[in-house]
Length: 102
Image (cartoon, rainbow, N blue to C red):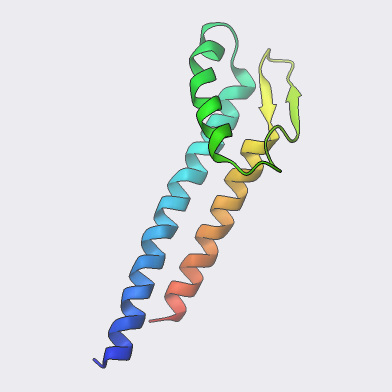
């Protein structure tokens, strides 16, 4: 294997690793969106710290966007849903790029 082949294999491995991290983050964010929809009372209080942490990590332009009260006494966090979709799309893109480098 040439040094160029080793370099592209390393880049592909790094991209796959980043893709896995993004996939896990996207799935966890989607679970958080669902949990917030149905969160009331003690569950809502437990999620406040997690919501604050995630809000602190997200880009400013996205923070607080499309947040709606639900009939289940929770809130649909559109900003978290958008961030989850962005993470999963980036995961898909990185996987495609990594497979093209093989």
